[in-house]
Length: 486
Image (cartoon, rainbow, N blue to C red):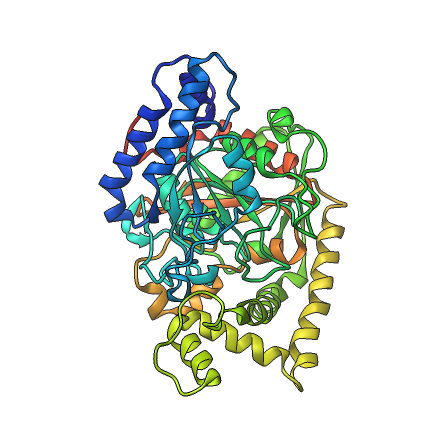
């Protein structure tokens, strides 16, 4: 039987083992039961979901074919625009904002009758690594609700890991899909920059942001990626998927594949994470892959480069939230300048204000050359280092995060360590490369450990094939299903 949850549900719908309405009602009931604990959803859309389910049931009853994602209950991160459905970015400043258009990814899935259960929690404007920067409070980890789900796509990871959605779409600016996927013991992929349209994604850092899937297994990630990786003329950076559908090449033999290990990725990570990654390397060796070790000194610059560029772009992108056109507006003010100041001071959370201030500083006169320009030059150095690495190997294997999910509140008490959780994930965004996180073990407390496979541009098929082969061989590290059982 296929490991794909999407495939299993699709076959059951086609065989009429249960109706799409029955399937959807079970997920809605699971959300009602578990969301008060997980806090994964900030907006639930049962009417929208059941309306779509009835359309799918009508098609099946009429003997019409349905696509793989048709009728499958799913969720969207709350920074992906949905026409007529509240989209908040989990910020006070957009608490009551309802878009008048759909993001391209949702337009694609909506056309396939994907069943939208609701919009999921996130760090405010995708700025954070724990989901605790959300205006609505953080999403909890389904393995242990005393721990964070990760960020910024923590709500999607919590919903998928907690089985209150089959799959979801998140956004990844510096690891925001892969890090929560690692923390929650599931699969998350950040595609190549430009492979998936960003039109309708509320921007954090435009040269780094990328939408991607979060699922319980590699095959489902491939199915969702194939669906959403279409060229979009509405996004000037869009290129769409290159080559054949990833699902068509997913189960190829990896004997002889060269898997690269940059030694710098294994420095400064927790011992249990290092051991789990080394065990994964042994699995690949047993499958006939060739392991290639190399040095990449420029990796040490990745974190400062990321925070300078991301914050600079954020200070520009978030300038539109001024209380004049839409969103929250301060009530008492003297003049326009005072209104804008009070709106932004009270509408944005502390982390968002911190990053806007840092970004404005590095772009200001006298500091632009010292910080922003230097960061862009170093970005080029890191890009070249990865290009050189891919001349010697097919994919790169690394830890996803240097640690497992930390306890609730830790991000507030130790913000520096929280920033360091991005150290393994940000190079992928800096270079616009694809990366997928897959579970590879557990720590002593039973919290999941993730590893990531990084590919050259538009090599999603290669990294997902390698991930699938590992998952098949080491399936004891697959995520368990929590919450509702179907």
